[in-house]
Image (cartoon, rainbow, N blue to C red; front, side, top):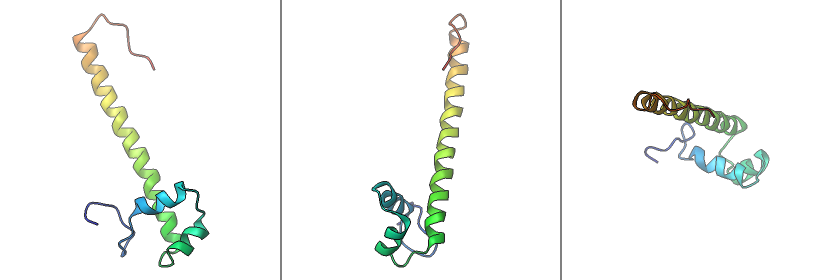
Amino acid sequence: MRGQPCIHGMQIRVADVIDLYSSGLSASQILEEMPELEEDDLEACLQFASKRVVSLNNQANKQLKVRRTFLEKILPHAPPYTK
């Protein structure tokens, strides 16, 4: 599982747990499917996924700002970018 975020001390990928949630399973169903997990493990997976989404969004916003600044420099008379 090299390079993939896993649950501490196990070889269960966070993505696998999130996939189970996204396929419609409840926390209790996931715990039945993977009895080695505990409720805290599921919570940690959700927190990790949430922080990852926020991080990726922040990175995308930074890249957009850099591109916007670049375009404003090379096209000084263009109307400002608005979302």
